[in-house]
Amino acid sequence: MADARGAEASWRPPARPAWVQKLNTFAPAVPGLLTTLDADELTGTATATTGLDDFGGDEWYEPFRIFVASLRDEAELTATGHLMVRAELLRTLANRLRVVADPTVPAAVAAPLFITGTARSGTSILHELLALDPELRAPLAWEVLYTDEAARAAADADVTWWDEVAPEYRTMHENGGDLPMECIFLTAHAFLSDQWTGPQDVPALAKHTARADHTDAYRWHRRQLGVLGAHHRSGDGSNRPARRWVLKAPSHLATLDALFAVYPDAVVVQTHRDPARTIPSTISLMATLRWMRSDRVNVEGLAARTAHGTAALLDWVDARRASGELPDGQFVDVAYAELVQDPVAALRGVYGAVGRELGDDGAARIRAYLDAKPKAKHGEHRYSPAAFGLDEDDLQARYGGYCERHDIARER
Image (cartoon, rainbow, N blue to C red; front, side, top):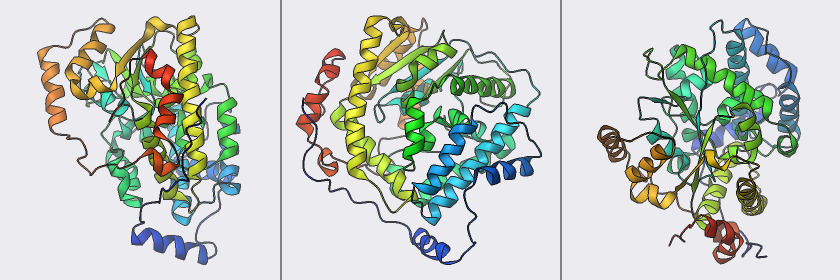
């Protein structure tokens, strides 16, 4: 079996803005300027600032405690990284308290569409295009993070802060308070989420997350969606009920058993793209995220885990779909090549698979949205397998069975 390894990685982190460099140099030199990361202090601060104290059970607390300890002992955070993750932890704890305290009757979550696939395979743009349909409903960043519509401006500043810390990130992924939000920010409230294990190197939490039963995380996911659905039924401020949620996260691939346990009527839309493009692009994204928060980025480790782990995961999902362990009839496959070449045709395929029709108005909405969002509008994301010590031919060989099963053409 090819090991997908090539020469030594040559990736170099992007230049940091001057203010980030100054903060990282100045803050550690002033004792007490930054508070420590402590589980009890964080929960106490969240309860003090919200006036609420019911977190809704305690299943979330073990991964939360492991995470905070791993941040302190393993992540090697810079001052900027420390501030970023502390703010995110307090925001998430406070929002969990608000969701638990919400007095409204949660709305039903029926037959949701879950978009998944490898990272960098078109899941985000597919999510955005499906969310254009007025009869579908995507969770938006501001409501996932804060619940309260009054916080929309704060949410936009929150999610675009990453762009200020590492401007190159905008070439890889677009954030915005009113854009559809990934499910990892919902399950982040249960502290079993790529939102915590991705942007910082926290091996203890990563190991716990890989071994954990994610059913409770999906139960929280459903609970939060129910509250959002009761408050903001259409996603546009009106009370018109939406027929279906459309949701998205590449990480759903690894937790499909828990997903279907909580959402037995779900439909999973799985995207497929040439791994020789998705794998190095994913590593580039992950390395940049970690560089935002730490001076140490283990690129070789990221490359090895991503190249080998993703291949094993894709083979595992296909085998379980073929065996009937996963409900293959509830999957819809979408080729990235078709999504790029003829997005309307690709969307019509998804609609047909779920018993709906994409009319002329819907097709016009898709075309107008894409015209207003040209590819690489924030600059081109440059990456290559060689930059991460990977060999493109070896990657093709390692993923050969997957590519053959899904008729994935090699991208040149």
